[in-house]
Image 1 (cartoon, rainbow, N blue to C red):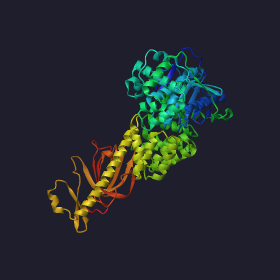
Image 2 (cartoon, one colour):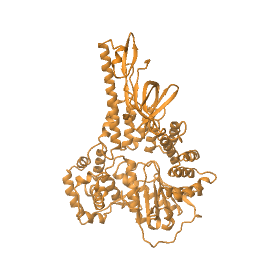
Image 3 (cartoon, rainbow, N blue to C red):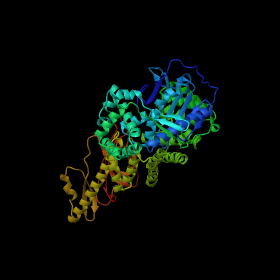
Image 4 (cartoon, helix red, strand yellow):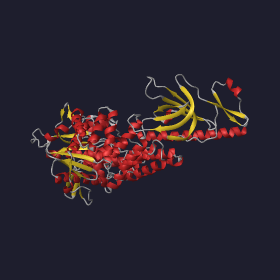
Length: 640
């Protein structure tokens, strides 16, 4: 990713100081032309809007010709806003040193769970298209796969940044002179390039960063246009990397030569006098509205959308009155309510965000974005222990996400989040598995979806299937988040198997030695003991010692609620619920006594509840979450 105006993936192209007078006027209606992956808004003619939509949709298909999965539709269509010129666009550009940046256009390309905006002035669109396509490439790659090698991510973005559409012909890979000039003077070994991650100096330091971009572009250019079978090699490399292979090994295997030889080939390639671009004849038709299908956007809706652009550029003070006025208009508009919820969240007024978001979902039952984002927000509110989540929050989230899936069944992200929702509250593991499998069918390279399937297998007792899937994820590179979580789940499986082995050993020991210590024998034992009647004998259980500051209670474990930020245990004791949380399951001691039950540690309601000794530490300041320390599972027929 290249940096120009700010630190949030908002990139721009500088434009000349002499600009035409503003032609944006409030009395000109906004219209929208919709494609499968983009929605283009503007005050220009429907034909102009459609031309932009077609170009962006064709770009996705062209990139998808190289990287399988890049054609996968985004969960939320990218919103494109066209202005006649810079003056019209000026209130909606990022600020630079407190003033609107002098730019021709930019892409605020967010995550798959947020809206992405492309904002451009038509008078300077050709100047800004290189930056827009660079960032749009990142967005499409991110939607297609979770773990993308840094060099490949930037090299592909640079390669496709020169995309041009002329009728039914597209041109990509135009030689970038500044990159070639730099590489003819300086070059880094490919082994270094392939090892770069987001923390590497080569990716973050001045001139070295420029070399990194140039050589990443050159390597992609050579693989695609300079070697036979380039597209097949690229996809073989990406697939092997996603499966856990080292970047260097995966590339050598994909191209069929050692990295040292590929290094020599690339050095000779960039020294050539002439490099070529690719010309593609497009046969794929794209799903874009015809001009006569252009819809006029209601004034409150248009105002709200413009306010959301300002929110994305941190111009909150300018966005607030625009959005609040749109939300107060009658009849109420769903998008205006949705924008108001986003405004309140950005103002850190979380308690005020849920009512307009719920209203937006009710006003727009057939709007994918409204249902999708409402479901996500409900899940996040609950995971953050917010009081804003509805009482039946899990079912509310499932209903909204099921509507989103019904509207766009080919949205991998909506399917995956629906699967996650089915894991919450009283879990429905079968529905969660089916939705997650559909997500993986649509986006097989998404490691986070594979990880979710692995968690489902853990929680349903499919140990062999869970181990196979989680082991493949644990060895994968990238930013390490999915690998770390897979490793944690594998440790949980190891702990389960250790407990099961201990139970079997204890059973064998009791069969060999039918008598056990009496209660009197425990008086000399420094560990606290509890007893279980077993016929005419009593079995002694040694509980962990309660440490200073800890509290313990005997009760029944009614639920383990798992979210992305914490794991919460709910125990009912003496007529009240005791709750405590931990960041991870492995942070809590889980101990099982006796041999009369097989303990399955999984998230969700415990049916029937488990008899447990529950240990926790109160919050230091008297508010917030108590910290879960230990859960000691007792036999179901245990009597204290």
